[in-house]
Length: 140
Image (cartoon, rainbow, N blue to C red; front, side):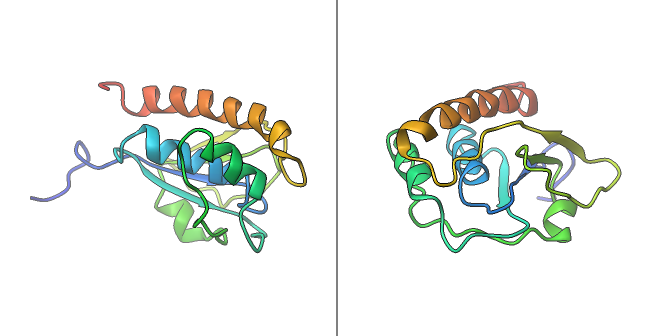
């Protein structure tokens, strides 16, 4: 069976500087809440050595394990292969390609914060992800 535009999964790329907190939480939520119906990528312009432990803990409270995730470098290919590119209020520059949907989500940076400070950021991301899923998968 060939993949046609109607059966092709929508794809989303989340970008933040370190790919260690916001973009990782967003990717984890989208993967989980879309039940695999959306292709998910995340990356950073200057990836950290590891994912933010407070973000991992906050997501574990939601039943989502991010402990094995590794920050990835933003590539032109990742942008080209994505239908929607979401930056996380960090002023990151993404290559711009025609026909892509770009959004910037103003989110506080969880870097260096404890889990109590990360929870409201996590909850904001979850609400945005739920709205994104409703938009990308209107039938669900």
